[in-house]
Length: 149
Image (cartoon, rainbow, N blue to C red; front, side):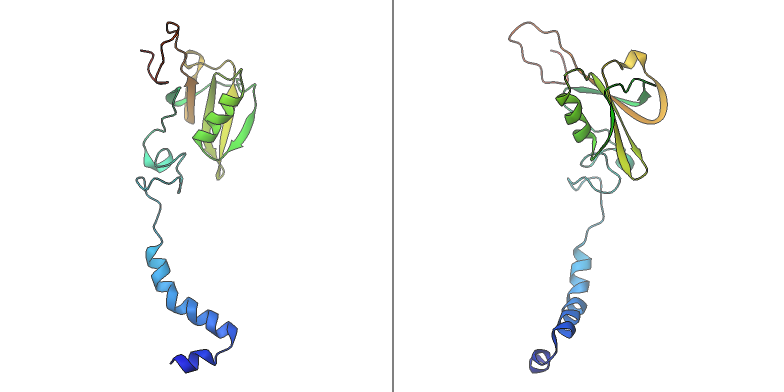
């Protein structure tokens, strides 16, 4: 077998390798799951959002499912790789107080706002509203970014 393998041309050797290794490689290829620690499938971040049904917690933001503020995306609408990327964009913009995040045509949309709050938002079918947590704590007190205590 080995001497016959050595006499094969390069293309045939490559095809032989693929034929022999395909069952091993394809058996190890895992399907996306909601507990693999990876943003895959239709997840908005690692193991949350989309079909995972878990919301995606973002430090320093309150999460509000199916809420949006019509015409309050004055800081721009961009594509995003995930909810953390959208939060990062909002954090880089000093005027941003909230962002809407939602899937659209195989991508994610990130709409930044300097005026959208939960009290101004309306029910929607798909959008997720993340509003920055603002803590008015005594000087020197550190918040965990989620709770103001």
